[in-house]
Amino acid sequence: MNSSSIFDLSWHAINVNKSGLLGGKEEKLGRKGRAAVVVLGDFGRSPRMQYHALSLARQASLEVDIVAYGGSTPHSAILENQSIHIHTMKQWPAIPRIVSKIFYPLVLLFKALFQFFTLFWFLCAKIPSPDVFIVQNPPSVPTLVAVKWASWLRNSAFIVDWHNFGYTLLGLSLGRSSRYVALYHWFEKYYGKAANGSLCVTRAMQHELAQNWGIKATVLYDQPPEFFRPTSIEEKHKLFCRLHKDLCHPPGVHDCVSAGTMELWNQDIDETLFTAKVDANIFLKPNRPALVVSSTSWTPDEDFSLLLEAAVMYDRRVAAILNEDGLTKEEVLWKETNSGKEILYPRLLFIITGKGPNKEKYEEKIRRLKLNRVAFRTIWLSAEDYPLLLGSADLGICLHTSSSGLDLPMKVVDMFGCGLPVCAVSYSCIEELVKADKNGLLFSSSSELANELLMLFKGFPDNCDVLKSLRNGVIEVGSSARWDTEWERHAKPLISKVISGEP
Image (cartoon, rainbow, N blue to C red):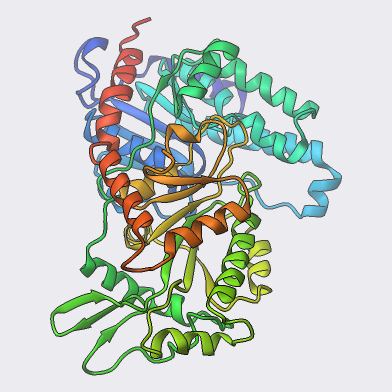
């Protein structure tokens, strides 16, 4: 693009009328004004920003333009909403790892420049002029720079939604003492302060922003939207029918779940691993495995080894308690399903959902485990099936530790919304979300997690009183906490204020 076209673009952006606005600035919210939601990442894997988009369209009656990368499919509520428009950017091309390593500073620079100009072009030319930009942070560079410049050119307000600190994430790979991390920190702080308003996810982060960054932020806790709820027995049965092949017959896998499930169907009974249907009646099978769910982005701030080590400990301790040392997985399965005796500890099926850079590494580790009573499945679910799985599970596991120690895992919020108790890694501010012995348990080591699994699943499915107590606590604590209520109370007033230009 030549200099004259840039000038023309800027002049047009500054003078363009705000679409759908019929009155003064104080009347913008509630009219068909416009908001732009900016994510320099896969929008389908950014649930909080999807919920922002839905609330802006539904609760603030704004037209919403989403500028993000493609990849995963967003929730159907986003795709079906006529006021939400998705604009997909082209991503930085994949570079061979060896080239990235040798020319790391140059690759970093050119990637940032490519992302900046692509994002800046979309914000200034590809979407109508918005009243407000709402941008996810991290990533901070070049996102905050591009959005700040675009907001100036288009005479728009600019709000940062602080999910974490970008420089701390970069520090996981480069080390906190790296000069690149220091430079990233400067950009993040400088352009974060340039915003017209800020949202953040915890009170601990709010305090850090105020004390050390000079930024006044409004806490908007993650809360589940309406489609995260307990799953009915009919929905469970339909879900497990859809997932039957993935759970029971994954290619090349032979474990305590796949063994003995080669044929679960006949004329008279409609059966899955967990449920059975006889005539019109659906029920949970008494000899089913316990279902444990963990959602992960397979990144360095989640140590998946903790879960694998805990699974091995559970398997070995149960084998010793039940005198199963030396038995094959087929013999263990026969004992559980055909002996007619009540088994003190169940088989565990861990379903791990998500995508990310370390997935293949841990899948290989899982394949090398020798387990008789524990099985793993790594699957990717649609945005519609994921809440159904959470609502069908017996326990959630969270391995998130936070690079900054100041954010909270949204996966736990989703689990609570579905009535699912959680075992979570303990860190500085996790107790803002997980109330120990009320709606979940905390652990700091694989041994602690193994002990919790043994305690919670002893007597499963009917006589595990601690697990039932935690489930009741989840429902009691979270019964009134929903995203739309939290957004109406905290985000909407801030958005109204910055659009109207109030100080």
